[in-house]
Image (cartoon, rainbow, N blue to C red):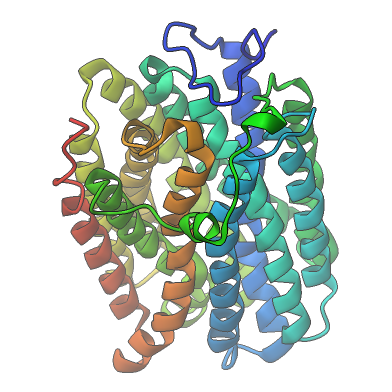
Length: 422
């Protein structure tokens, strides 16, 4: 199996005629799934349980807000920064491959620090380290899509990639449930398993190469531009950014606080929380897989992106409202199933839409890194404002998820002004 035959020139945009085979798609999917796994597993359960074990349930939401918030800010800065570095890398190993290896190793060391941390300060240091390096890994993984996949296949490939997050969520919560009682194993098992597939993909990738003579200069102004794409010059990209930010903000409220939601609002015992989150994730992810694959294929078939993103965001917003109104675990599970429908369709089509409206295909990793701020910053924003929302709402997680639902629905309509995608 050849990833894409022929070495790429320095500023190559993928040949629109050459199609990628299912062998490439399989390996790319496994690597991207593994990247999702190492990032999402701590956020879903283990980080919250670690914080709870150190400070107790009363202090845990505020301590988790501190750790997740600062970690999210690190992710926000590092994703476009490493994307830009990747676009300028002249290594003989390629532009993307070196950062896959560096990101995996550095991030795994950060997770190890979190696992053995004796206090919140060390947890914070470890989590920031993990976010820094795992976001370097994520930045280059996403850039492989415009590097290697022609526009006519991006909906299908993005749809396949859309199943990675839910499958990673199932896998992550399964490992946590499997190794309950062994905190070190709960944290490190996803890194060991995911790392194998990331390294395998890095080894076989027919990576882009950049000649040193073609590497652009990097001034202070150029560095500042790493984190910015002009909304005036690129309004479609800006609206896609706003839409994704609001959608991911809704998701961040859910996954960051669902452990405490189950403990406080639903009244679950702490020993039952990993199993309940696993069950909810399994149900939601099963729906996401179907919705993502079908949504991506329908989007390519119809040539339309916006209507799918709009509908998906509204459905996800309604799901947050259902979860907020739930009074028992069954209500939570119903909301998670509805959320899977919206989330799956959104993740399948939104990535294809974003690649379609990239300002500069030759700097895809940098621009996708800027867009990934919309995926990283909401975690910090959610962590920062959730305690205030809970305080105003009298500690009600129903109010918190009501706000999440409104964010997703507003994000749905933010996609309408995009003109260069149908």
